[in-house]
Image (cartoon, rainbow, N blue to C red; front, side, top):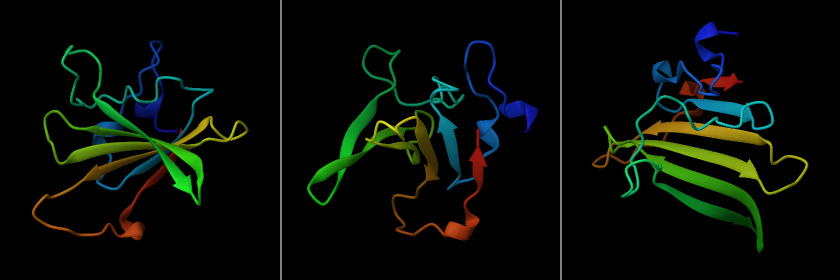
Length: 120
């Protein structure tokens, strides 16, 4: 394992600033509760402390099955983080985090082969 990705005593994850656009990281929330403390500067709520996140539940058919948190970069409003996990008690501890850089004026799709995967 890359030592720059080992959680520190405070539970913060470091080393993610080197991830490329489209990077996907898997976390086990039982092992690392503070997986969202990734070192990036995310847009804050009016209180200036709490990250401004949109929370959604995605449906498959008519049933809510996936929980999603969306955050936008403070320094770069075209940089996003999306956190996904299943609404299934057996699997809800596994979180997929997707970091994405977008260009508002261009509508391009990510090439799956360009994504980098990491399991933490």
